[in-house]
Length: 127
Image 1 (cartoon, rainbow, N blue to C red):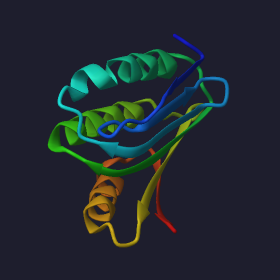
Image 2: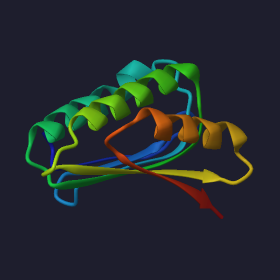
Image 3: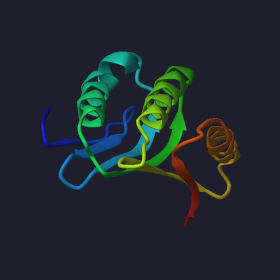
Image 4: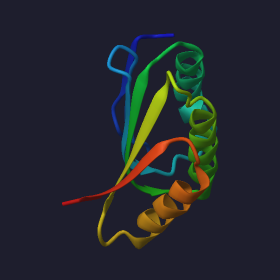
């Protein structure tokens, strides 16, 4: 596993930052790539490897402003996987960052907050 992975955003994929040393992950932008499974392959592999470690504290800032249904499935799978790896020794915080007028993203975040039992899930309204 690479300690740090950074992928610049495009018109159809988000900015990605994965940082094992800081226990941090960020997605920011829009996500509706035609082959989203391929785009998320490296990200999912990194998460799988990272979650196998004794990571202590991990923060995931999700600031995706729009995503398609394929991305919804990938994000849900990713978050459910994270939820299963929370323990007394390993804490995971998800910051769901959205504009206050983005009703779809806010509602999806609220639904996730109810579904995910072990994560600390914060909905943050951006400016």
